[in-house]
Amino acid sequence: MRIATYNVEWFDDLFDKDNNLLLDQEWSRRYDVKRVDQAMAIAEVIQRVDADIMLIVEAPNTGRTQSTIKALEGFTKHFGLRQNAVAMGFANGTHQELAVIYDPFVVSVSHDPQGVVSDGSKPVTAPRFDGNFRYDVDVDGKAEVFEFSKPPIELAVEHLATNKRIRMIGVHTKSKSTYGANDPKEELSMMVENRRKQLAQCIWIRQRAEAHLEAGDPLLILGDFNDGPGVNGFENLFARSGVEIVLGGSDAIQMVEPHAAIMLDPRQAWSLATSRFYIGKFKRYLNALLDYVMLSPDLAQTTNPKWRIWHPFDDPECFKDLEIREALLNASDHFPVSVDLNL
Image (cartoon, rainbow, N blue to C red; front, side, top):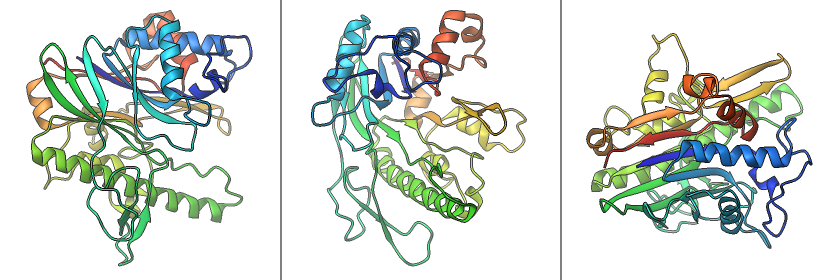
């Protein structure tokens, strides 16, 4: 079984208010890419990755007239994708939903949120992701209340051929962007505040992970963490990155993610990336490792997992194949990450 995560930039803008796919020559929100070309590129990437389940980060919006499920069903039907079934979790107010597309002949998938609903008035371990989380992140003796702008999607998944059941948690944690800051002082304040929120979200996810790990549930945690070992200098202020928190410390049951493990080794002299952003100030592209697929140790030990980052320049097969290389570049500023599990 192949499982993947894919952050699709500005996917929502390829649909009108009635969930109709916009296949025209108007510019998409992707720089220098027409809407029809971005849509075709996204479909090409999904076909090539060929995952049985794919988490779509920044999926089309659910709102007054818009529906994530209808939009994605229409998209997969138009392009004849085998991943033509859709599941989503809690809708949010950001126009960037979390959803999965999957092949219903290979897996059954259902949204299955866990935890008690909390308003944050008192500490609760791993409350439901659409509620509030009370926690003292900076250990100053004052607990604060946090929430997800994009609540993680929790899924119960069954592989139909083997009846193997796994848990999946799809995430898009807080961005550390300082967009809108008016001066360096405000930028610094926003950076620290966003880091605190991001870490609180990752602690919340880790608490949920520990419940599954202690129960012996096969578990995947995947998505865009907007973070990683060494990505942000403010790790020194809070001791660890959010990704390290979700993976688990040396005294805990640890999740397995080889790309994160490489970046945790201070002696390695190369880097990995799942995203590519143009930085106008330097007229260069920044590559960053932000997207991960983490496995519980039982899955890692029994399924002979094989991870892959579908980077158009760093993956040799993607680089030499012009069609998929161009599709990856036109579709999004993130690239899929997949894992193959032998069940």
